[in-house]
Amino acid sequence: MTDLKRMTLALALAASASFAHAADLRIGLQEDPDVLDPDQSRTFVGRIVYASLCDKLVDITPGLEIIPQLATGWSWSEDGKTLTMQLREGVTFHDGTPFDAEAVKANIDRSQNLPESRRKSEVKSITGVEVTGPHEVQFSLADPDATLLAQFADRAGMMVSPTAAAAAGADFGLNPVCSGPFKFVERIQQDRIVLEKFADYWNADAISFDRVVFLPIPDTTVRLANLRAGDLDMLERLAATDVASAKGDASLQVEEAVSLGYQGITVNVANGERANNPLGQDARVRQALSLAIDRNVINQVVFEGAFAPGNQPFPPTSPWYDTRFPVPERDVEKAKALLKEAGFDRLEIEVQVANNPVQMQLMQVVQAMAAEAGFDIKLTAKEFATLLKDQTAGDYQASQVGWSGRVDPDGNIHQFQTCNGGINDSKYCDPEVDRLLNAARVSNDTAERKASYDAARAILAEAMPIIYLYHQTWIWALSDKLDGFVPYPDGMIRLEGVSFK
Image (cartoon, rainbow, N blue to C red; front, side, top):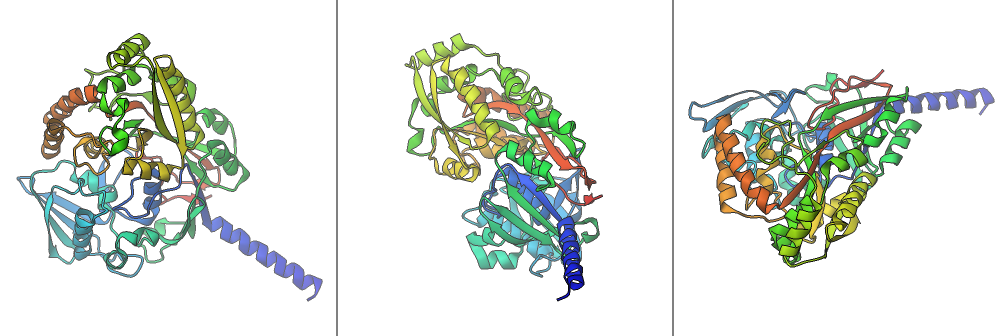
């Protein structure tokens, strides 16, 4: 081969590589998602992947309005017990299976009856699904359900291929098949998840990337360094301590949105043998731990004031917040008195925490504060998916964990604190709390719902199966080469309309 030919080939390969790189979007995630099955999964980062992989019946606007996605329209019966949806035509799943009313019926059946499903409590109100036309479906409800459309804007509304789901069963997450803008290619645990553009996507013109590669990088410093080096195009959950630096970097953009969720400490009160300890069995001990914590100091020290101190499932700015129970001031003496009343001068407890620097720093601050009130906290760092697995199995005393939040308030409390809630890992159970939270689900009267949540709050403020700490702000950092990204309060990364400049 002549030197000229070698040079020509080299230039062609370089141009090809440059083109391929430009068509790939690389996103840094704070954790590795759990199973990629909308019916089984529970991680926030999993939902970020789903935003590219799995379309839902409905979506939300940045202002939290419910808007069409796979459903193009809907209406309620006068008694609120029947929801009729018109479905988008011309949609196919990634395996070629058509999306239609039968597919919706199969998906609801799977969410309700798959033994491993975590969506059961979210679609519990649905007593029947009737196919009323090729692209029309009717949901019958036992009682009015004010939360259902919001559930359909999340995992319960994510439609998977009935063909693939029937063939794979509980192993569907190994090769998920949905109908979103990108289809699944490969996953290497703790390394990457690769999706490629689905050519037959109904809204393909809004998608500018050939591939999306999700890279779990728990260390926030390393994640930002990768973005600055050009190895990432975008990252989620920029550390609050890095915001000023990132905003001062001309090669980066920073976007923010106040979240719908919370971070706290979930306590194992009845989930197997490991609940048999003073923290799990005595509410006074949990109250003492809460009083030992200065939530304002956490916000200033760990998050440089960027987040909001909290003590409920809803932030203090939410209309659902119960003002009778404001964020408590730290009271070490009262904490000591409660601990002594429970029979202890000092008490050792173990708290598992995700192995990323932010969560570790948070719990080290809590550890130091609690020590002054008589708590010796042992921190056990775990990879996030392992932490959740152990939490589900009851193999923990307490767990520093959060929730990304939902549009409807029900999504922040019902599945965590009702006896049979799908994500009630503490196994807290109080029939009166169940009654109140179930009542809030069936009313479309905002005042009635608020009264039910407030009454439940009065009980939960004493029982404290979850010790709420703060409400975060979602912060994204992006290469200045990206254009069109819109921040949403649910923390998701929606790629419609996003492109390289």
